Every structure is written in structure tokens, then in C-alpha cells.
Length: 186
Image (cartoon, rainbow, N blue to C red; front, side):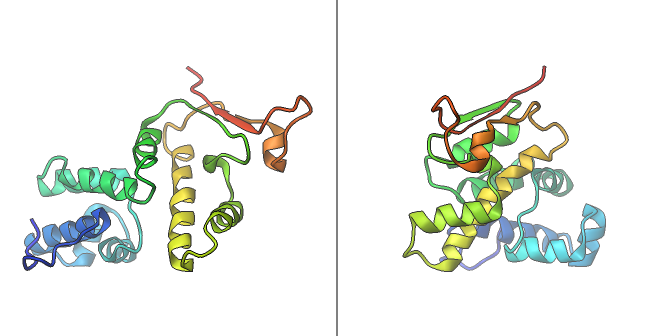
């Protein structure tokens, strides 16, 4: 759909997503504010989505596919954008987490990513990569914290429970490592 010059195509899913979103809107002759009204989002959000500064939710991507009549196109770019924020071995897991009714995770040395606070995630990521640029580290912190959106969705995994020792980051009296279990109540 993009009308960019050859050789200037975006090389990331985030770039492709933003270019496609803007190109589809412009093809329909809509201003950003007109599109925002139709999409039931703020003008500020549309501007940030198109600039790649804010990630919309999956519902927005699906709505765009329906609105523009391009079944699955925007949602596939959305999936790629989500997955590319993580190491290649972890990206598919994040996509599965979004749909999961049950997540069972065991951590031997720390608090699982789904339960980390922003400051804890930042400290862990910075400790593991002390020479990386601040901006790159911050993007990884944001990606880790955004995973927690599965806990706030309409049908979140039920029955979240964590070992008290996970909060303290130490093993419990039995010597077991911190752990978290999120499971469906059904």
C-alpha cells in the first residue's frame, strides 16, 4: 500500500506499520482528526501511532483492517511490531501471551517479567547490558512493561498468585526459587 520511493521502505515492522497506517488514511482522504473521530481515539494518539512513538492495542489494528477493507494486513504488521521488540527467541512467546488463558512461569533468580515494576525491570536490563545506549535500554524496559497489558485486558488470565519470596527476590523457607503462576479459573 505504501507509496514510498523504492529503496526508502521501512526496515522494521514498526516502520512498516506506521507507513501503512498513514498511507491508508491518506488514500481515503482523511485528516488525522477525522480518522481519530472514526476510530474513537484521540488526535494525539493517531499522531503518536503514525510517528511510531506510541503502540496501539490489537483492537485498534483489527478495527483498521475492517475500516480499510484489508483483512489481516494491519494486524500482521502489528504482530511483527510486537515481536520485534524482543529477542528473536522471545517474540513469539509474547504473541502467545496476548491470547493465553493460563501462563505458568518459574524464575530461578528474579521476579518474572509480567510482574516486574518499571524500576525493577530497568535495573535488571541495565545490569545485564551496562554498555548499551540509554535509548535502547529504555525501549526494552517499555516493551517489558507493556507485556503486562494482558493482565488488564477484558479476559485476563485468572487466579494470579505469587510466592511472597518473589517480591523480595529471595528464596522461600523451603529453599525454592521465586515463582509465579497465572492460570485460568475455568
